[in-house]
Image 1: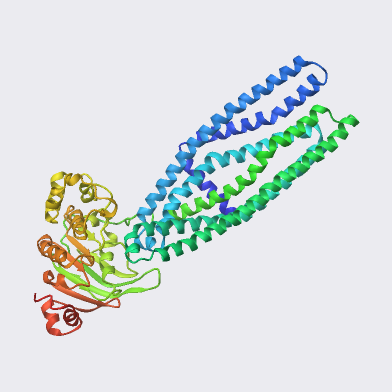
Image 2 (image 1 turned 180 degrees about the vertical axis):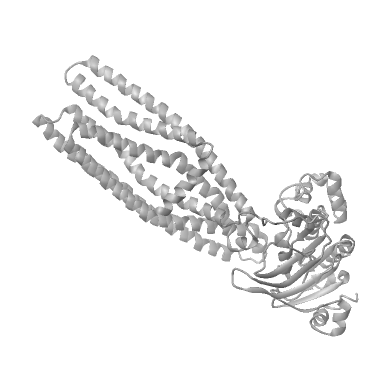
Length: 580
């Protein structure tokens, strides 16, 4: 309960700037409750003072009062709904932006352990639930509470005994609804989580549909999806059973209460202790409260689910670092491109140790090939330089400055990372190349494209640089995607280029072409090329061989060949690439 209150108060903070509007909306809802609560009293007066006495003029007058109350009720309802929806949209806008900014501040380890479908579900489904909570469920909660209070006030004034019957009824219904909320919340939490799992599975399936079809594993994927979908189905059925049971119980209790009122009210009318109008008013009150009391149960449950959704969003925000840059972070104005590892250790969140005391120094302008078997830690090296991860121990330095102490924007200008499978967005080629520098001129873009040897291909397209390449660059070949990624990196004129296994998905001819071009592209830059293939040795000044998170060999290619160690054996197994 304490945690829920804390989440609610924190959620209310997002109404900053619209708090007056939100308060006015709540005030309108309270007035709506009062106008609804006073209508049975007007009906009582119309019956007792007009209809039963034969004064139809007075009955019509009270009938007009009822109409006026209904009109005011509608006006209050419209105004309250408009104000609350508008302020709720403002609050959720701020919350959604905070979550999105927090996602941007998270390091790569967060994305390694978090499903993308879960994040998408939080940004979309969870924020939508909070919108409904602030604009509708909270309104219904306030409306129901105040309507019950107003109704009880007038009922007590009319007949204490029947008011007690109503009070007991309300207490029982609220108790049922509270029990319902306690039972349903954990189920809905599991449903929300499972929905994220299914979203992530569907996203991965659609993204990897070519691989799935090429391996003919559609049935396996469908079976996995079926298991997860069946789990979600079972949870929803369980939730439906509980909702149906407790939802109908409220109607049963209200029906029994109205029967009791008819019995004792009838006796009261015969005994002269109750008027016909008062009995009609009591029954009207019970009918008026029937839907708010039932809605109260769903509202309580939805409040619990909305606060759970808010908790998940706050978890994303709170787990992100306050700022990407350290308070004492600096900019490197004139980088030389020296890279150094000092006793670097790193263990992933899975518990697997990938680097064990790595020491390495790369001089400005040096071209280094990092090779080794899968899982040896070679890709992790370049990811640490780009600061996708941070070492558990030791330091990664650029020009003698710890990368953690370099401002991120400055680091991104100095270091360009080209991944094994570069992500090409569903935008024009011009926008893809200028991704890191949206204000780049066309001359700058074409210059980068020429350096990456992709300009001639782009110019041959009917729409040239305005050609939209489709999601993940579906219309481009593997080599063309690599060249677009290179152009994107070169646009910023970085001093250090990190190529993470750039040839793994290329055919031999394309690999040879890109490799020849790289010799020119990397001429005045520090380059670290991670590759299991040994063809980049042609342009490498030095080779680093890694095994089990440690450097086992390093030196000039010729020296390592003469040495006859691990690199020489790898070269022999792959064919004498160096001498080709």
